[in-house]
Length: 256
Image (cartoon, rainbow, N blue to C red; front, side):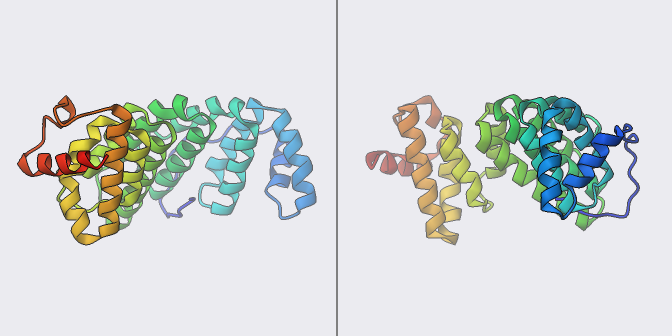
């Protein structure tokens, strides 16, 4: 990500890097592929120590998207030892104030999920709450926050299907009067959570009217969840259905 902005960075200054590790990180960020390979081997060998230095460098280069991508790649290569340094780094963004904060929070959260999705789920949900708590002062900030939050909701739920992450997806579905991205429906199908059934039924008329493809996606997700949960129309999962939703559910259940 690395979305630029002109607002000052109020986070704590980065810790001092050892000269050798600083050199290896700079070599990894260089355009010389031959230098990169050797430096990455040395970086990986240092495990959590290198991970902390890479995270510090992410904060120092928050406005440089290409460098951010390279730093994240190195952290993924380090693997499990990088988890704790990345999780701790998110604590350095107690509140989102700038678009740079949004970008860093999204990058670090996605990185954490890629390292260990199930372990990262509670931390990821905390980051979603940070984004949701931001008072929107201008259109640009609102756009960055809304886009980042949607991507993180999909990534979090799609990675681990944790109940709290599925709740975030269901919140986007609302009362069925607003169109939603197909990615949310796909995540619900993957997670197979019975709580999604009534929201999907409510969403279908609006979504299907806009796109028959979307309508098919909803019906397929519905049937996949029913099959996984072994549900019937009498199940508690359908207790919130109105007459129209119950009629649609009965029709879909007959085709399962």
